[in-house]
Amino acid sequence: MADPKPRRDECFRPLYQKHCVPVLFNSLTKIAILGITVCLVVIGCMSCEQLLLGLNQNVSLVENSDTYDYFETLYLYGEAGPPAYIVFKDVDYTNTDNLVTMNLIASELATLNNTVLPPVYSWVGTFQNYISPNNVWDAACGSTEAATLGFD
Image (cartoon, rainbow, N blue to C red; front, top):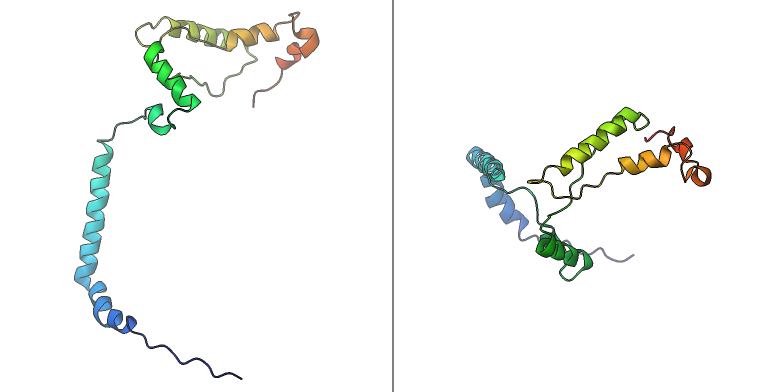
């Protein structure tokens, strides 16, 4: 059997135990650390109010990528800004009254010339044409059966 290696002399641990540990576990140090933590949390909460919400897409995109070029062209020539989406929750799409109401909302949005730039696209009208009986797609796609399927 080989002789076990001799134990190394510790040089930093005794100094740490002798000088740092008593200072860290002192009640005054604990109060100072707690006070600094509370101050940093309060400063962080106060600074959240100063942050601007939203992010320009081009800040987070790689320059000269297709998406970057798309948004640059959109800002230069379109002046429309990013697209907006309206999502309705728990809507029964098989009820024609709901579809008519959603079509009405889309047409009313198109009249807001100061805030919404035309055109406003909606899938509701196309869906109504698709599920109406005896339409062009009924024989090939069975679209009248799609009207009865759930959207969950």
